[in-house]
Each structure stands twice: as C-alpha cells, then as structure tokens.
Amino acid sequence: MAPAYLATIPALRRAARWAPAALFSSGIVAGDKPVLVRDFVRSALYDPNHGYFSKRSGPVGVLDSAIRFHKLDGRNAYMKHLDKLYKMHDISWFTPVELFKPWYAYAIAASILRTANLSVPLKIYEIGGGSGTCAKCVLDYMMLNAPPKVYNNMKYISVEISSSLAEKQLETVGEVQSHLSKFTVEHRDATDVAGWGSKDPQPCWVLMLEVLDNLPHDLVYSPDQVSPWMEVWIEKVNGSSQVCEVYKPLQDPLVSCCSEIVGMNEENPSLREKLSFAANGLISKVFPKPRRAWLPTGCLKLLDTLHQALPSMSLIASDFSYLPDVSIPGDRAPLVSSKKDGKTLDHPNYLDAQGDADIFFPTDFLLLEQIDHHCSGFSKDQMNRGAFKPVKSRRTIILDSAAFMEEFGLPLKTRTKDGYNPLLDDFRNTKFYLSVPTHNKK
Image 1 (cartoon, rainbow, N blue to C red):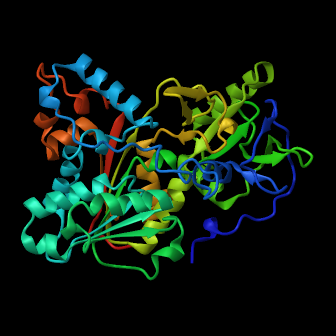
Image 2 (tube, helix red, strand yellow; image 1 turned 30 degrees about the vertical axis):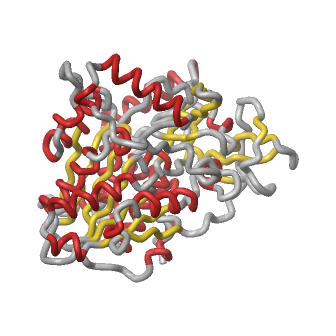
Image 3 (tube, rainbow, N blue to C red; image 1 turned 90 degrees about the horizontal axis):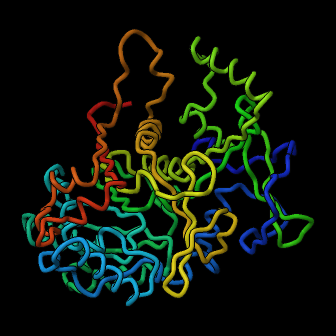
C-alpha cells in the first residue's frame, strides 16, 4: 500500500516533557490518547462534525459576477470595492482564482494546453477545488480555445474532502450544461492512496491551488541550539478538556522522513558546520534558545500518494511563499485566523483553533521541490554515487505569480484605468510550482 514512513504510528517510548506554555481548552482532541500536531491540525480543519472547512462552504467566498477591473480608477477604488464585497458576503476570504475569474484559471488552462500531449485524452485532477470556479473556468477555456476533440473527450476530476464544497462545485460547473458530462467530484481524502485505486500510468495534470497552505503540518522542538529535535504531541491533562504539548524523541516515520529531506539531522556535516555546532554548544549553555520548526508532512504524504497513483502526472501548484505578521513561533509557522462580525482576528497560538479558525502555512517552494523529487524516487543518497550526476525524473520550475501570469495569461484583463494591476502588484507573496515528468526512468 504505502511506504514504511506512511504506516501506522508506532507506540512511542514516553520520554516526554511538558510544554512551558499555558494549558488550552480543546474540543478538537478526542479520546485520552495523545495526538501528533498534524492530527490536531487535520481535525481542526477537516473533521466532518466540527472542522473549519466541513461546517459550511462559507469560509471561501464566491463572487456573483467577475470584477470589471477596467472600470475601476486605481488601487483605492479596487480596495473599496473589495471591502464592499467582503462585507456583502461575510466570508473569510476570496481565493485568487475567484477574485480574478475567469483570467486566473484561463492562464492555468493555457499553460496546460500549451504543453499537454494532445494525442491522448486530456485528464485533469484538481485537489481541493473550493467552490468549483477553477474547474468551470478551465472547462470554459477548453470549450472556447481547444480543438473540439480535446474538449469533447476531456475529463476533469475534483478530489474534495469537504462534502459541502463538493456540492457547491457541482452547482458551479453545472452552470454550463455541456461541462457536466466531463466533470466529476470524488468526495474523499486525496492523501489516502487506497482512494486512487490501481496505478494509472497515463499522462494527466494535477492542480493544487491554495491547497498546500491548509495541509496538516507537524511540529518539532528543541530546548536549545544543539539538543536533538523532538516531536510535539498534544495531550489532554488528567482527562480534562485542557491540552498541553508533550515532547518525545523523533520516532514517527513521516516526521523523521520529512526532517531528513529538510536536512535537520545531517549525518556528515562539513568542517564549518562542525565548528558552528561546537560554538553553538558553548553558547547554548549560557544562553539556551528553544527552537521550533514546522514540517510539511501533509505535503509529503500527498505528493507520495500522487506519485504512486499517477506516476506520469504533471503538477501545477500555487500558494503563499510567505505570510506577514505571523506571531506563532517556529520556522514555517502558520497564521491562525478567524472572522466574526466582519472582523478578522489573528490568534497567538495554534491551539486556539477549535474548528472556527483557519490554519494556513507559508510554502517553502524550494523544500516543495525537494519533496517532489524525493517522492518521485530521487534522493540525496544518489548524489554521492559515482562521479556522474544522477538524472532526475522531474523537470521543475518555480515562478512568481506575476511571471506565470505574464507568460500564460492576459494581464491587461486585470489592470485598472491608471495601470494598477492587483493580480501582479498585490500577490507578490505567491508563487507557482510546475513539475513535469522527463523521459528518464527510475
């Protein structure tokens, strides 16, 4: 089924340490057994009863009509219009594919059409399709611009974990009757390899727009600059509703694998690293500084599943490369945000998320590239085998969103009267990741 590091978490030796932070009440942690942070995040976001995305489709907004940017004077007019839309819909946020419809999705469709092998029927998977806007706009573009045979024979499959959003996607795509014969929604967890059935060797495309930021992450902790990293678990205190962090040695296979990809536990450090380690050892005795790091284990699990199920896939992912004003400590730390009465509240601790708050992480795109190569069968170990450089089985590129839109899109369509372009000017903290298979076999 799945590799060893995706197996069931083994029973761990309890070498635990209580977190120095205060206790937090939580209805998210069920039962009395401790859970890894990724399980807490998954429950807070996706639990079918109280998860943030499962309660309603409301967190992600849907515009009744496309914004007419050419009729807006400039940035001030756009911001006023955006503020009006948020108040009118009372939702947490609009995705870029929604704000800039149809042009954002048209650019994605154009990039697919430019590079796809059209000798086989076009098949597109979208992971976490939101309200269905991307699916509808991509299908619209193919209907209007692709050869009729491509549109008539194509398949667009949305893999959606939220039942309410799955229903909304069918409603959105169904606005064009001819799309429905090409579109299906599979209500399931995309990280579960069993849900994909047998391996499909045929070429296909996988889209992940603002998906990586909501994937479960794990947290590791070290009390100072040189002590080994430890896994963070969440545990109820004496059977009450209060929870606290517990630290254990690294033993979870998925956490261990991700930490190796990140390079947190290099086995053969350079002389410079050894000297730095020794210096840190002296400093840590006098000025110990706790360390925290968030690991994208959900991304690792998803990409491993996709490479198993769809080995010939081409991948397009877009997300936030950094997030401003994050107060939660740790490398790659998330922003935890809720909205009430039209006001946004950022929480100082991830344990505040009780199904009423979004938890979203920045994406380290260079790390994403490393994970992608690892899951496709290329590992760091190969770098040291022989004098010849090992050949990777993927070709990858990371582009700023503005560069992607200028290459594949129509930027003039999102420009205001004075030349201001919110798609190019306001989304500088977002990037695109493109990954396609080469002809090199493992």
